Image (cartoon, rainbow, N blue to C red):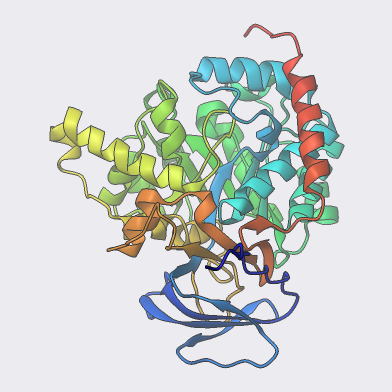
Length: 460
């Protein structure tokens, strides 16, 4: 009788050079490649070859048996600075979110709070397989706040889009159809911090749009962003503000719609507006998880967008009220559409349906297109940066898998993500984040959280 205790296999060291993934199920999101069982060779951070029986001397080899490999998820809209107050607002409505986040805690944020929140949020995204994060930052309380938000994205190792927003001081001035134009400090950020559009962290603009400001202000803000050569996003179709102010429609009538714009939510935008969006080549981001749980925002517009040929991207929104992983968002999109068919069959029964494969497209290449990054990421394509995730299919949440995309969407969770590469560099390896300072970051997050939660509540 053998009484020897089984010892787990030693973990591979984190690779520092080229990588070869062998024999994995590849969900490439590249229409010319589709799905296949094969190999990926990564050289100098880029995908050098995709095929079968690839060989590479001196590369770290990943055994792809019982693994799926797909492009890293792309979150096209997250207020990342709220990372230290995660899940404090489960069950909030928008009025509570505004009271706590925008009126009470936002004005109290120090530059260090922003750094900690962004770093925690970005690392959590990486842990969940999100390799590109579009950071919708409306915490521009001072130039130092913006600087620290950018520094945290850079320190995390994620591919980040810093979408420069507005201050969380004097929120009523900025949020309630105020006439203040976009902060001019964005010019300094463009010139001094993020001038390179090929860097790992790049600059875009988060504008308020006609529903939070006015059409006239939005026209000036869009002109500023276009003068800087950057893309812009804005929230539209937000509950009652959608039909009242018609964010997309007012921009269409003003001749301002173009393919450099990303419209977030679109829940209560009408069909005429969605047709305008489609005709302009602009993009949409569905935040299905928060739209499903935040009363009054409106139902996810996934099927309505598809009706007009718009392939939406997906996003988290805020971790104050929902989990920060893309699996949650994909399942919320499915659940909301199913509930729509149950409770409003005349409307939802006529809308296009969508499958797990569609949702994986929305979470990857559609997000890259919406962020203007599809030449670099979003698909497993030779020549693109190696932004990818290795998903374990041998866990008992997914085994035995009859349909791999369905298993990923239907039962996947961050614990299934074994490896995360960003430009070929391992941000997560053997199931663990590789950042060297995790314990210190946790302590900083707890300190920031405790100080913010102690702030007396400000009445709206």
